[in-house]
Image 1 (cartoon, helix red, strand yellow):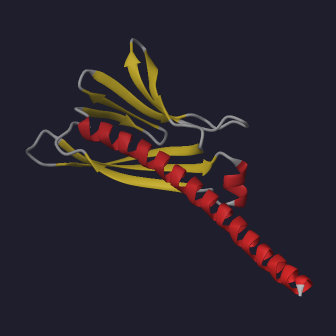
Image 2: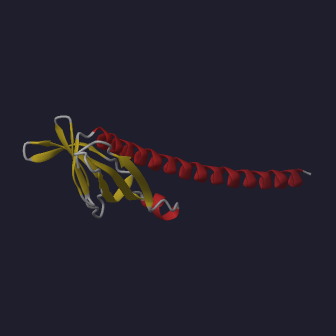
Image 3: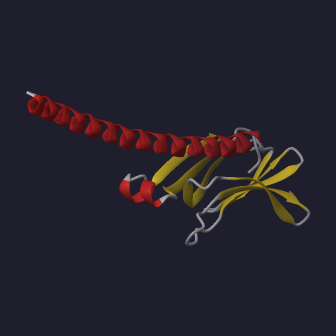
Length: 168
C-alpha cells in the first residue's frame, strides 16, 4: 500500500511540475511581448505627438524626419544596428549646427528601420499643404532568447498622422 501511494504521489508530482514549468514559460513569453508592445507604443506615441504639434514639417526621408515644434527643431532618426549594439530610435533637438539627443529607445528592441512617407495634397486657393505622414517602425527583439526561441522577431508598428494646416 505504501508503494502504491508513493507511485501515485510521484505521478501527480511530475504532472504538477510539468504544468508549473509550462506556466513559467508562458508567463515569460507574455511578459516579453508586453514589454515589446510597451516600448513600441511609447516611441510611436512620442513621434505622433511631435508631428501633430509641429508648426512645420520639413524633410522626411526613409530614415529621418525633421520638424519644427515651437522654437525647437526636432529630428527623429534611427541608428544602424551593429553586432552587440542594437539599433535605436533617437529624438534630437538642434542646438547650433548639430542635434543633441533628448530621447532614445531602450535595449529591448533592435530597431531596423524608421520609415517616413509624406503624402501631400495641395488645395487650390489655399496656401497651406495638407499632408498625411505614414510612419513605419520595424524591429527585432534584442535578446536572442526572445528573438529565436520565442519568435518575437519582425515587430512592425505603423501609424498614420494627419498634419492639417501645416506647411510641408
